[in-house]
Image (tube, rainbow, N blue to C red; front, side):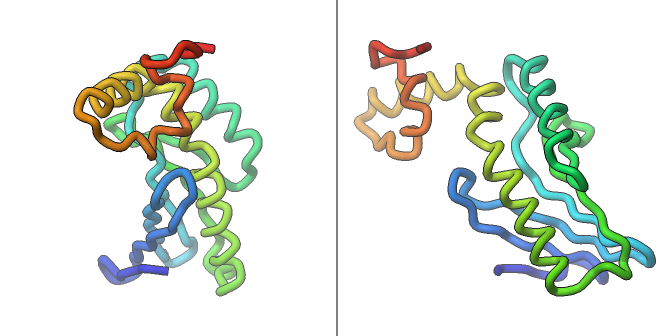
Length: 150
């Protein structure tokens, strides 16, 4: 994995994903705990109540991980471990869980919080003859198809 030490005791790891191209995780090793923060997605542009509700329900399905927001409303996954529990195997397990939760939630969160932007992106790319390959997961939001909204 790509990683760097940003400051003493703080490491940044980049995890490759399937739906989200990459998940950046900050690991802070303190005197007693290892805290992990993984960026998931920006603050939603729309449908905020359903977006936040989905995150809260997801928190109940992911013991030891929690979706949270920063002061701007951007979404992160947060986890921590007692320092004594930190090992190569436990770190691998933690990074795997963070990636699975972030990557697994990504398309749902994009659709909930950014559907209008996705529709505009479809229209803009089509008008310019540009590739829509990375929008295929949101084909049902393509304003140029008859099944949009179904």
